[in-house]
Image (cartoon, rainbow, N blue to C red; front, side, top):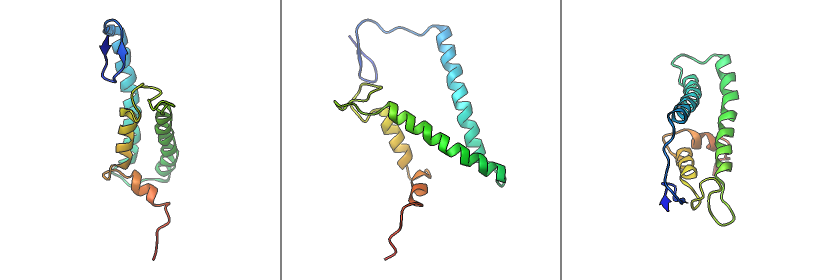
Length: 122
């Protein structure tokens, strides 16, 4: 039995991806990162945002939230406390990474959420 990094056990030997499969994985990864780079570029433009930029951001933000929600749903916990996707004890590394990124004080997710939270004025 061989343990993989996620903690799952497999009988037999680990196989190496074929060159074709590895190239396809690289293309997929590059394509996904290209989309993320484009979204980041739009958000970080050095010039003043136009109305079209703001409209595009309003469309993009819910889409990015949907991506995060779907990833979290895929890595939900099972009745026995394990990740449905990874099979490791929940929270799995994917959920921990999303949690850490969303709550990282260097990012703007938490302050954005705080804008909708009623503040105690007393």
